[in-house]
Image (cartoon, rainbow, N blue to C red):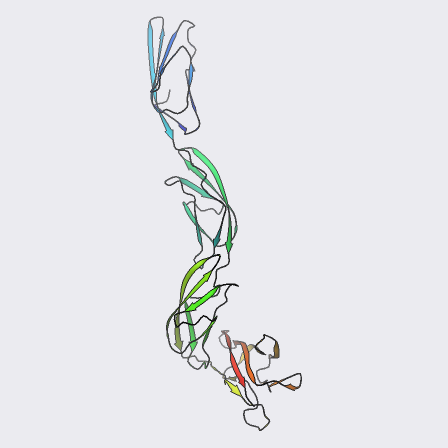
Length: 307
């Protein structure tokens, strides 16, 4: 027999004399649990330790032994679950510490980080004892989906606003006490926002805001007076660069688009389909790609139509 034998907990191991013996030979197995006579093989179920066998034939005694090890069998501990997604991903743990792992993703660590919903499996091995466990993960969208660690605004931007895209039913609280999805920025610094949702509980994120001097600025007024007195009758950005792509749109407070152009020299006259719009605040959105640098610029803000 080999010096050492082993089997997985919950399984069994057969110890056997494979050489032919005289029919009158006497066999004695001595195990930690009991003594067994006159059989060429025994089955070990639970007890490890030293196992001896003695064969007496024609007054000749032969002995042999093997040390039996019982190895812990990995357990299936993964459970299908629904988790709240985050920017850093979600970690799933195969448990069964200090064993070998092979995931369906190709990773070989006990824990892996995932970013998508789906079915994941892992093969866990300990001293030849292996199982395959699987888990179905459903990731719920994060309460706040477009928050970033750093935001930069050009110094010339008159309206500096952080806009959050929050899941329906999410409660928002900024460090200044505001619970709106938009926060107007007046100075540099770190701003934190607390979100609370039924699915994901309470989370806190922060945004670091910096101001910078931009080489290619858009100067955008915050109001105009389309009363045909030839003074401030049109709303348009003052552009200082050439662009390979340009899109300028105006929407009302309900999200209805009332003006759109891709011509850099176009101006809004405060009308929609030839009719003067009411005095109110309107939302502008500008996208542009600089010709020299291919840098994309996106500007959003409000303009007040005043009569």
